[in-house]
Length: 457
Ligand code: ATP
Image (cartoon, rainbow, N blue to C red; front, side, top):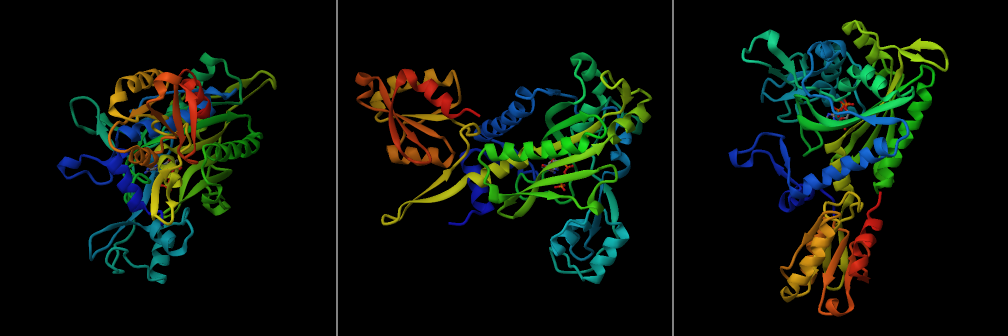
């Protein structure tokens, strides 16, 4: 029983987690739509993030900034000048490749921070071939900017040109003064945001791992210069614990600290939390000490002071920033992969089940109400109506009870509630646990509380 991407993609499509985008028009490559289960699941992932990063945080607040920003923002942030990938074409089969990824696939190590010349030389020297056709007839490397362009207003001339944001972080930096003033927060404090970002990736793929339109969950944590490395350690651990507390398997996770040569020029320390997907290790979460680079850049380009007055120390400074940046789609995929399981229920009868061991807080449905017979539909519906006031619940009266259990197992529903012929007299239902498959008799009046307690995060 091997966990493969094919199986996970097929389950996502057949059960309504994720569909190929624009499918009836032949699709749009690497675009995906979240179906009825997918939207619930991803919303739960985002909610779990918000809960720990904002709601329960003594230091952090939230923000929802616009996707379209003054284009000068992207000059200041360095994205206009530097947000590009080294692109090369295969002359024989006309496919495009990221030179750094070709090297990474060859060596198993990231090729960040290499010059174009270094990459060209390496590819020639080691005779790295086109993964599509095996030729080594490549063009020279050219830099390709990843930002999507669009226009604002009625004329499509250059002065109306805008970019779709390639990260959510800049919306936070440009609002630093607003937020600090209105919340009267003292450094250290963090600003958190969840939202869409867009990157014209050269080589998207691996399902929703690398897409051109994706969601990020970013926190910019502002702290006093000199305390940044401590805070970096703090958030690095906090992020790892968040994943573990949602049930991610520890052996499938690793924290990869960037070596000096790999660090961005403005960064003092960076760690990637990586996950072992069926296709290999991939970055989930980038945690970086970004120093005062971003605020300094914006201060310079906007002409507005972004200094903070520290009353306690009686000094002015530009805060340092520690940034944990997580892809909502990527971590959603990681949780799906991690939860997928094919279990032998009865070896003799060759009985197996596909079960998603999702954390109850993330599961699309918290419970499913299953009347033992269609004759019990009215009463079972009453139970269903009581529960849906509190959380998402499925209802299924079709087929044998065993088949219905399996359908719920496959979508990760933690509790199946069977309404039977005794329910009316004893006021109880049978609750079946997805993972242990054990059953328990529970009073209908206690059900909401019983389930709320179990799905707590
Ligand atoms: P990669 O090296 O995989 O392209 P990156 O280092 O460019 O990622 P960051 O700019 O650090 O990524 O973005 C922060 C997070 O946003 C990533 O860790 C990832 O979870 C998510 N992310 C970035 N690009 C994409 C994408 N194209 N599709 C889905 N998620 C993405």
